[in-house]
Image 1: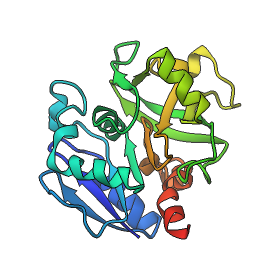
Image 2: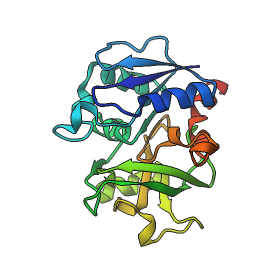
Image 3: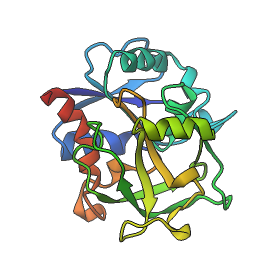
Image 4: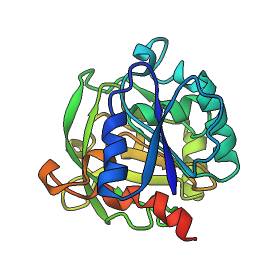
Length: 228
């Protein structure tokens, strides 16, 4: 298994992703610059967080049109596993790989804290081994997930909601939603289930010294693909 960790001007979680995969998961990984036109030789893709292209136009909008993302779109269409965290989630939505969009947090403030997520489906490799309740960090200013009501209904019917924000006991309440996302949605899947985007950072939750290891259950998706 070899995972491409994408790098854009403004990426700042690429090293977190690389070391989580290699040092904590034992997965071979390599950085891939945004100007590359091929990801041949890679079995998976991690689209990391940060401020790609300075978040100009919209978060992820310019990155979604980069050379490497054209290859990621092709790779995902062929069933390749793709994970996007934070800005990576924004990029995947802008590229049309996932439904919906990410807007400014409801309180119009950057939020940086640990949150709890409820795993809503087990149909994807990304959620197959995630804990029922996941404790994981967030750090974003534009993480409010929005989607049209008809699309939300379609996503619900097809089990595309991967994670929702909840409290420590697993219940949804007003205080557990840190950014005002529709229906408390924290992460979504594409219809095939091979692409996951989420605002929280699984790559920052792989060691106890960092505050917890719940991110490992999500990152195991890369290994589960190869085990199939």
